[in-house]
Image (tube, rainbow, N blue to C red; front, top):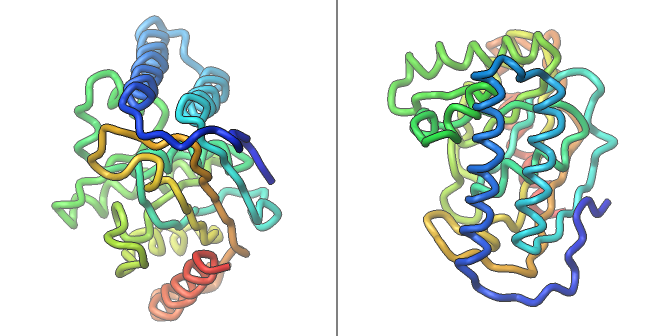
Length: 244
């Protein structure tokens, strides 16, 4: 399924379009924060603004988005477990996922002007990865989102992937899923790093991003003693999606 189609766009390395994407992020973030301050912010605003912003980012970067495996996504809340390559991963997931989804993000993003406040109002779960005990406590917010009917996207490695493969999986996402007995949906994101590499100011137009969802891994009845087996199952499922 092709969600955004910019096939045929020329391949160019550009700083202007990167700055335009950041400008769109700032504009939409400001809108959310201002409406929140005025007491006019509700769920419908998020349902409108976040997908609109995500589409704008793909359009301004002239990036095509292809999605496969949507039929695997359950109707009930789930934990999306995926690799993490680029800032473009967030709008890719927003557009690809057929439902309301929140995110786990690093604590440092909370301090980004306007953007951090907008993320907090949206329900983004900030985690201090440098302090394990605090991070575990903060992940409890993911459980609250799931109870409220919102699925949660969590990076399998706890942050951006290093290299092209898949590093060690973190236990946090699995503990959250087991606690609430919600399924884990293996998810693979491919190509975002070609559009906007980590730390780069120049983006590359004319690229294709793919999001692939795999069959959900049930957690109901799974005990903490079986956590290692579940993590290995998830790892195998992610690698299978990486090499379809």
